Length: 114
Length: 132
Image (cartoon, rainbow over all chains, first blue to last red; front, side, top):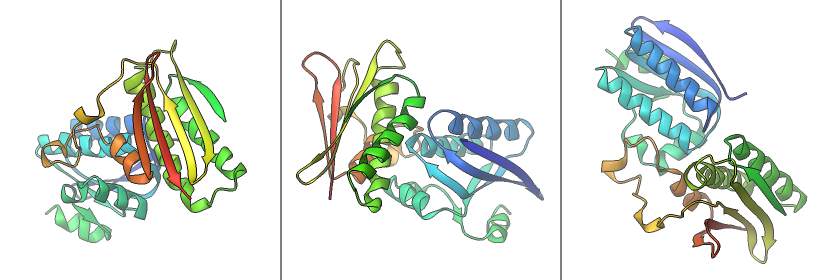
């Protein structure tokens, strides 16, 4: 299994609960397709819950960046929730913690969308 | 241990499984496996994607061995080669939002030694060592 994505709605924010691997190939493609489909529906406030993501490689990190820029280009916002220690490390190594808004509490994350 | 894998995305997972099996057989400390796993996946993905460019007539040749001071992995592709010095630094502010280019950074971060060689009969070999 690569990745499963469960969609929830909280007001105008769409929460995607990701579980599994965000890696080269299928995992990255599934995330990309989901984010683009949300944008087509006009949903451009997206919170990615990464708490159950077991593995991310450089392609997966690249897909997070790509999703972030795609959403931002549609005047939206994509933020991250519940980073595992490993993902936190990878985002630190790549200096992407300076790019993404990251939250530990879902309520706090939702409030930040305004 | 040597394996040859086809230039497909599935080979990334297969190489990681083989590395884990070899490391376990060699009695490698569990804590080192995360780093080796990441480096193997990134290097094989690079070989498949950037080296062999998914050309299934070209194999990815991988070796795992225990050396005096650590665990050594080599990954060879049969592509046109590249200049490592010309790979942009993905942590430069101007590159932060690029969708690719972080695999080499991860290999260098997680392994203790990483070197690239041009094979005399074509292709690129990356040699990585995780010290015990």
